[in-house]
Image (cartoon, rainbow, N blue to C red; front, side):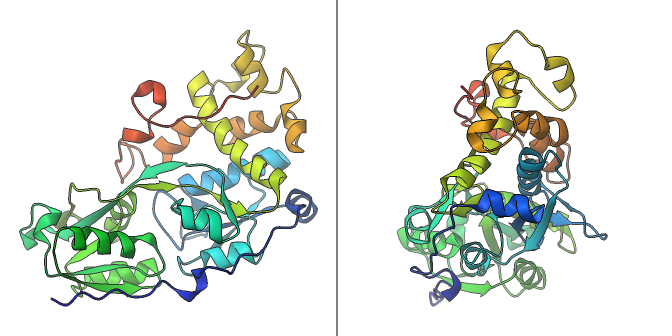
Length: 337
């Protein structure tokens, strides 16, 4: 089958970057909320319910930023964005932060006028197929038609993987995630590829989820995380340390359930995190209870993971590499000190 590689969407072409004004935090405070760019609906990460209420791992991050800035995690508004339009929306100032299962790459870090604030989910690209296709692994997919999103790293990863293994394929690309799901579900392609977490999430939308399986191969590194514009170190630090606070809270055993009891702890690291020692919030342009409000209102990283994508959810994802470094994973944050 002839190999077809579609071009990356013009909306994410290089050279569209625009420097951030060095006053994003002031602008956010003035309007009274954080404008957060999210997906158009990815269960477990950023997904609206029938009433328009958003939830997910990426949504929790946005709520945590609002809690840090305003002391109120509800002071956030969500803008659903396709993969094609997400970077332009951030560059133009339409959103203050992009928290939308977005892969941190060198090109995106250096050429789009953007900064990744960290990694909130370590992922990798995988493949989903119908069980009746009779395939046991990705190396049996030569000649397959593959559905995916345009304007993402997935197309390039597929090209690399199939070329390296001398296999032919055909890409069937769509701008919107639901279009990809619909095309795969209707049989327009043999395979659906995206980040493995996305495959587990999107499988829930299929007509008969039990008839499909995610293959074992992971063909790429996809460190996913929140993104801000370059040129505003203060806002970058607010977002970076919001994520770090949630990870450090888990490591220190501080959660939304026990944060009140942890006040007055003799542990210096906990005292610094909760604002009882030092002036670390002031260094960010925030109150010293910034991290306390994050933990109290949103929770630590473990709470967010388990609530949205963990083993007891419909996605049923194990912590794996997203476990803390002290528990066999690679999730690690610099200390508040």
